[in-house]
Length: 182
Image (cartoon, rainbow, N blue to C red; front, side):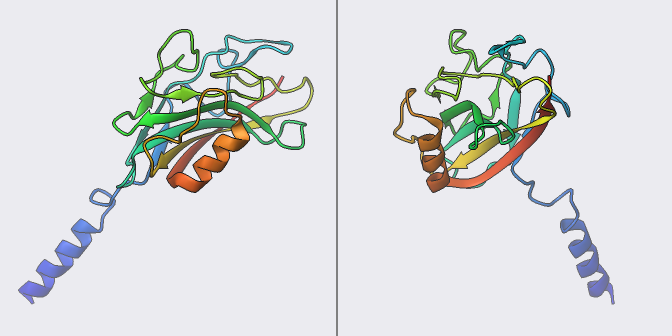
C-alpha cells in the first residue's frame, strides 16, 4: 500500500503544470489587445510613431538554430494581405527584440539579424495603417524557431520568398494577435 501511495504521489507531482515542459511562447510588454498610435505607421495617411513592439519568447524547442519574426495583416484589402515586418537570422542565443528594434537606423536588432523589405517597400518595421473606416484589422506577430542558423537570404528578399524559406525550416512557431483600426 505504501508503495502504491508513493507511486501515485510521484505521478501527480511530476505531471502537474509546475513540472510540465513549457510550450514555445511569444510575449510582449508593449502590446495589449489593440495596437496604439505608438505602433502605428507614419506614412500612407497614418501619423503614428512607427515603433516596433518589444517581443520576447521562451521555451524554444530543442534543435533551434535561429529565430525569425514576422508581422502580417491578413485583413489588408490587397488579396494577399500585408507584411509589416520580416526579421530573420536571429541567433539562437537571443530571446528578445527590444522596443524600436524594427528601426534599422537605430541598430537595436541583434547582431546578424536581417530585416528584409516589407510590403511598404522598405526594410524594418512598418506599423499598422489600415484604410480609414475599414474596421478592425488583425496583426499577427509570429516568432519562428528554425532548424537552420541562416536562411541564406538578404535584406532585399521579398516577404513571399522569406515565407517560403521559413515554411521549409520551421520547427515551431508562436504568435500574438493584436488589432487596430482608423
